Image 1 (cartoon, rainbow, N blue to C red):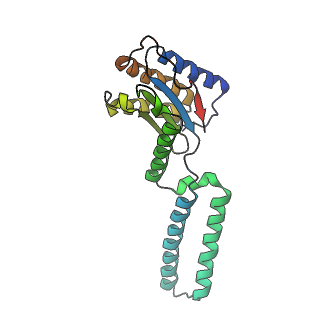
Image 2 (tube, rainbow, N blue to C red; image 1 turned 180 degrees about the horizontal axis):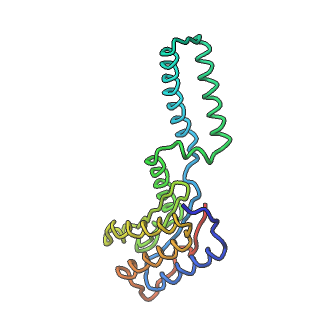
Image 3 (cartoon, one colour; image 1 turned 135 degrees about the vertical axis):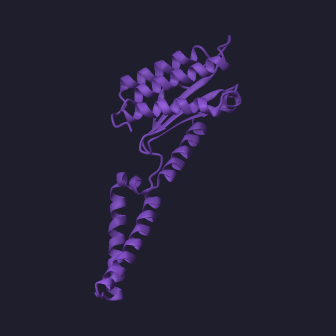
Amino acid sequence: MATRPISAEDHDRIADAIRAAELKTDGEIYCVVAHWSDGYFFPAAFMTTLGLFVASLAVAYGLEAWWLTIRLPHFVLAQLLALASVLALLWLLPSIRIHFVPKRLRYQAAHANAMKQFLARNVHRTQARTGVLVFVSIAERYAEVVADAGIDAKVGQHVWDGVVRDLTKHAEGDQLANGFVQAIAAVGAVLAEHFPVTAGDTNELDDHLVEI
């Protein structure tokens, strides 16, 4: 996924893309990029604890196969020391936690964050319910387009899936800003088709990319 910081120039390009897209529609586009969607300490701790338990069973069977013995208190102490070391490492190095978390849980955390941002940024509060959130969570390698009820009733999910595929492809090529610009244009075209701009249209949401 993207590794380069989003520059001030990239922020300006994305803001310009939002303003240009909204000139043709009554809809509203809001963009959020999250560097992480969760701290993952507890999921990572659970998975590593489970892994250590399985590994300790394998070691115990291996020792028995080689006719070696170890006193139970010493074996338990070794397990506890190994667990304490792993938990300390997870606490001190947050960036490694996500590698111990299944992809399904990562995507669930990123999706929950997308829905949280949709509500927290008031994308659901536009007058005609025509707000669209374009969301990316970098650490989870996850992107999503969340559309409000007014749009969702007219636009199939496959349309947003196509936007997400292109956005993810750009992010994987370390061109996240270009991906946002293209996604905004695609979302704007869909909004313009179903909700063309009318007289008296007002700008209800800020036209910029939010980094969290």
